[in-house]
Image (cartoon, rainbow, N blue to C red):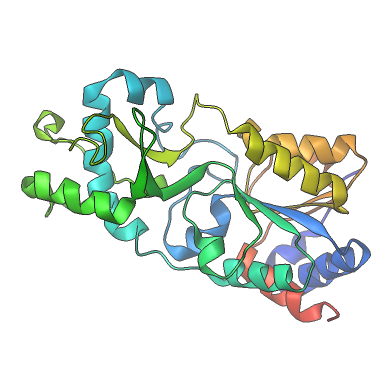
Length: 288
């Protein structure tokens, strides 16, 4: 049966932190599964509202990206503008506390659905980037991989007329760039093989998560005391599968998320609170 933190806990981080700390003392080794709610404090927008519904159009699919030059032009034009914000994002409180909990042996693995690399930037070492990393670009022809920073320079050099465009930041490093003629956008060829297409080294919708990442995550979960879901609605199956696996193994699943989650019906505890503030208060209550 799910035990939901009392309504007043929404306004009382300390009460929720004490309950979460008690849980973590009883379950000292937890696998963490993080989503967009962990990185919103770093200035990276999320996809879904408190009801788990899309705030914006669904992201581009793998099939659309690979099958259409115009789709790739639109994607990279928006990414050129959006990278300015995304590429400068820095870890927030949640990332820092999680790195500390890892060092203390309480989080043997963090599975992140985010593609921002902020867990590693905060000092975490045991991280599975389930959906890849946006700071790396992949050639789909020769499989070469290189820095997104380097790619940004190439995009700007090839498209000086796009460099000074401004738009609101969107999730996953793009921007809400509309009413623009994307047919004028030039996508440079792969610097290694001279072909392409070039794609961010992330898992798009319609694309499968590499098996090795899933296997490593499942092995860590099998050895852990439970699953701690942070800032994720679990609406995407690639993350939800770990909550299902924990339930099948008879292990508790706890969620710290401002909105609904797909696993609400079988959560052991749920705290509808800010991830960073609650984790920080929780860590202060844990025994060394």
